[in-house]
Image (cartoon, rainbow, N blue to C red; front, side, top):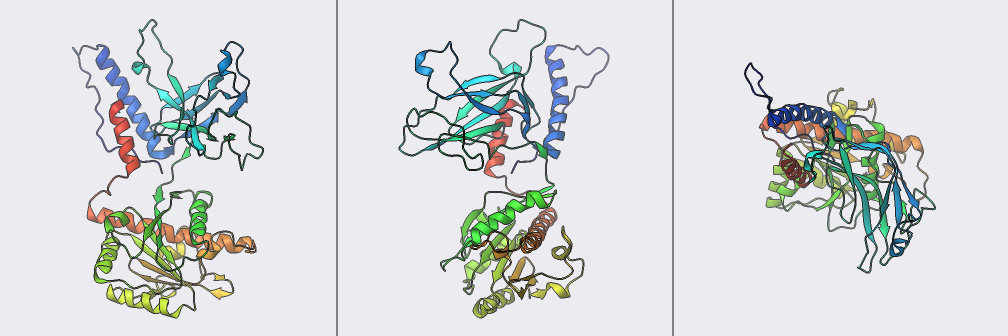
Length: 415
């Protein structure tokens, strides 16, 4: 998830007769237009590679010392990328790059090859010409890229001075080989991003429930243009022990057969989460009678009785946004039922089991697509409920750690 621009007023030079245009004022005037452009880009787009910037293995250049002739040379191909705040990163010609990292631990470690924009004014060199080209920096890192870096590839490197290899299968790269699967491509920003957590209980977890939730989140990118699920799905203990942690998520998901029992404090924690606009998605098999009864008791304690989606307004967002459902699907030859109680969405049936690949790879494509579309409607409902509730409360959500790190970077750059 890429953070939105900072909410910060822009300042522009007020030009009038008699104003002396010196170097400082000229620079600030141009920076104003750059900041406007960056805000426009960051508001509507996501950073990434625009074109080119491939990474290939090459032989060591002839003029390097013999100790560097170690089959760890890369060549970055020409291309263009755009960073988070809209700075264009232009690599006009191929760049030879030596991978110098030496893994001293016993286990392999991820190495990231990244490119970033460099402000000409930040370069510690004497100005000798009237115009200076904007430039870039290529780095190898053992930590994930920061918000202003664009990843070109990564390598899971073994300890020692091992040689690099091209992957035999680009979809499943081996150790010490180039991995391009995580390159971000510059594209339009979705209008909203939903954050989801998977709830864990002391009862045995349903097989594949976490993997199937991941499949649903991945489907948002290809099935809808305006909603994106954050790829990282955290696991939280349920019942909730700390509502301050849960508040970071638009939707909490739990599935299984066991009844749900909450103590007074746990019930208070859940109420606090729901009051912020969060949604609790509970799934239950049709024959889990004790679980069904426990959810009914829970909603009665919250004074929000369950209502059948079929009896609500025909234009309810769970039925219409973004995908249209006249009737709920039949999965595994069992009709699906959805009940709603405020911020609780109660699904009776095997919805999540159809979000991904079953063990026998036997689910028809139509079944998976239908289940994912209904799941996306639930994600959209959760995000919309959260957004409108926060607007009513007239407060902004607390910044995420990633947003905080971006703010620190921007402050250093004075943007």
